[in-house]
Image (cartoon, rainbow, N blue to C red):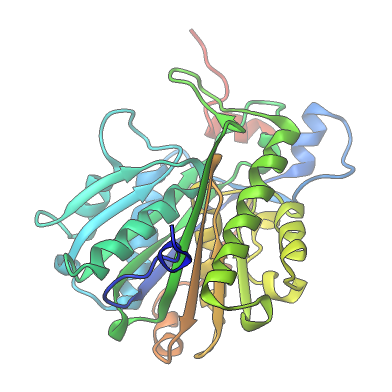
Length: 355
């Protein structure tokens, strides 16, 4: 394939018309998990993670994030022609989350709806499709959501980091956008680093195998190829956002690629809310949009186990400063926290199963 065809650009320029985040209120400190399972608090991967309440799931959280995106866009929901929800933890095995969200925000009935999966990059898969949907002229607006109530087996390493939350993006024509896509690139291989078989309650992971050759190979290949194909370099970007399963992985990937700490710190939220899986890179981007200025450029690179990465380049427009305070900022959701102990966490997440 010629290099000119590897960088994906729509025939019609597409951008982000509105964005919104949602993070549940409850927080479980990593030291509380360590207290129960290891009796030690050294080398904890994050500070704490967000935990959904008894009445929260991917559908309810997606609705909240979508409403924030619509507030910022000021778009009539009837104009939306697709509602796509990417997640690892849809509330139903057979029944789409997307139809619930579409109904709740007033986008039905003249709308296409579907649920997406690709582990932690299910949300950016939906975003890629939305770019194509709008860029082809089939639609004016499409809603792409990445949201999870992530799972971790009791005592497993994932239990420290598997958080909840995510983001919604209303994509539309560039002339109505807060940020315009410069292009995108996807890198995929069959790398079985993380999986969950049918009927299994918790996912399995390949321990260190999840770092290399999974996360680092795909993140760096996708990012570097995008930079090469777009003729850009790390210094051209004010911000960079990488999928964040923990704090160290995105920092190492950024350093390998030539990005500086100050370029990634705004979107690096995992230490405070955990790995939100399908919402990880997407919610990091919302924090960047909450402070970015016109002309700033942003690189976003997701990662999904199994495995693959999507890389996007964005340029901020002069519409962003006026619209962003129409809805709650991401940091506001992070700040409204209620700390819980492991016992309440166990109840909220249904960890005790009685037969």
